Image (cartoon, rainbow, N blue to C red; front, side, top):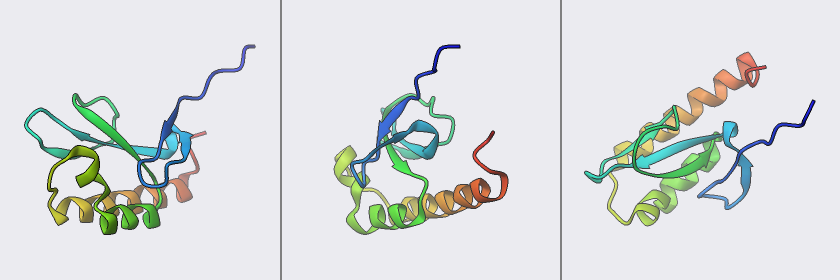
Length: 99
């Protein structure tokens, strides 16, 4: 059998290339609304962040998505992002990586 190619994306906080499954997509739509995109299919400009709490907290401290999307994002979004990443990291620890 042929080896399947693993889709890679760049983590906007660390600048590292990682498998897409280890990242979560954050999307800005045409109305300049920024949201977490767990499916990876929402329309709009996307940026990826690693499913790691320290990375999410660094994104909050550095206001990484403000710079990436060129707009002022509310602190509540960053709090939601940290909570989401924490939850997903805990799920991955409990249930493995989906295999």
